[in-house]
Image (tube, rainbow, N blue to C red; front, side, top):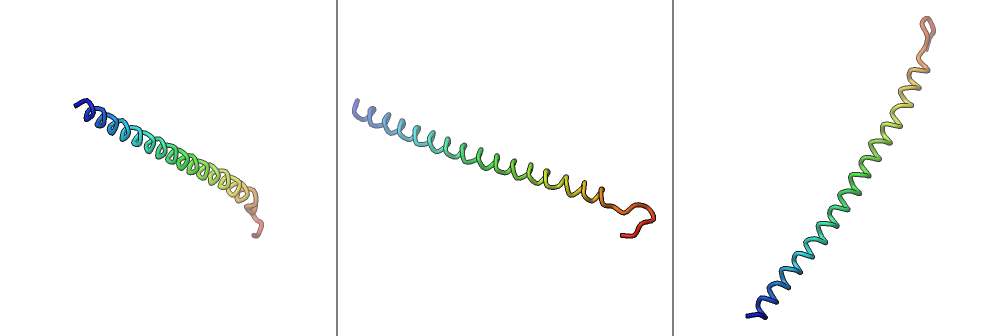
Length: 66
């Protein structure tokens, strides 16, 4: 009876450790993916601002042609 309990507890412990390892790997991959998306959004915002400034800066004044 002790051998069965030992084997079952070893199986439960193994499954728990494997689940923990996989969940940590998935968490790390998810964090890396979200950080990459945040950097892309920041880069898009940085690229967007100078275009608006250039558009405002080079608008023709009143009475001037394009």
